[in-house]
Length: 117
Image (cartoon, rainbow, N blue to C red; front, side):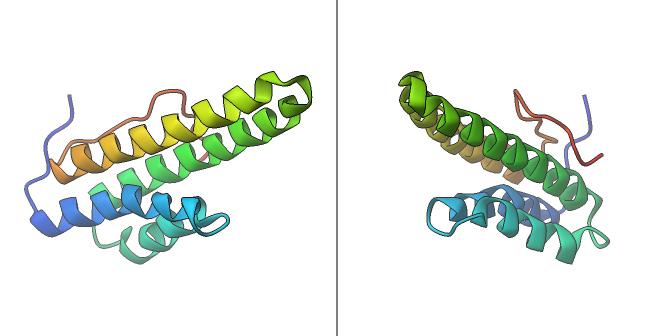
């Protein structure tokens, strides 16, 4: 198990890396742009933010891929249910990750493809 982060600012910015992904429910591609902006601004200042920013970006890119696949499968009707499930899954795990980051834990998303290492 990795150590828990003590610095309050570092934990807060780590949380923002995850929470900024919720902007994707309002702004197209906001789920990727939000974490990317915070990651880019704070990655050199805080190692925890760099770690959580990469994790958030990887998860949001994975979710985008799952949504594209679900969108294609709408033609087979099953995609409608998959779109709803992926959206709910994304919302729940983004909130969980935000809380864990605020607690200073190095959170890892399930079903996440790690593109950025």
